Image (cartoon, rainbow, N blue to C red):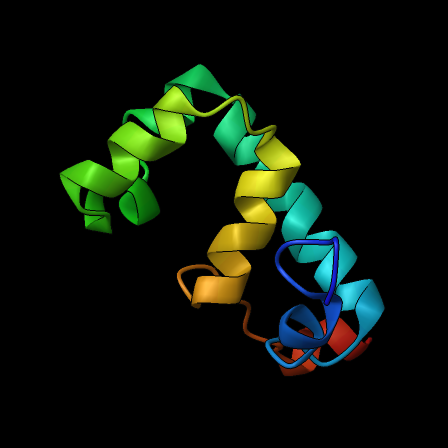
Length: 85
């Protein structure tokens, strides 16, 4: 049993490396923390009202919310050829 939720193995299966996970999670956490971005957030708009209420009612920090979204597959990334330069 893991104390960390979501489990790290599940998170790493969603990205290509632990470094990518760190970058994607930190960028998403910054977006969650930005009040202006929350008004136009497509991930939040895709959530059911119960999920939004649960998220707002919890004391979860932005990074925890970002990791949960990555685990559920709501947030992802796309690697382009330009990113390898």
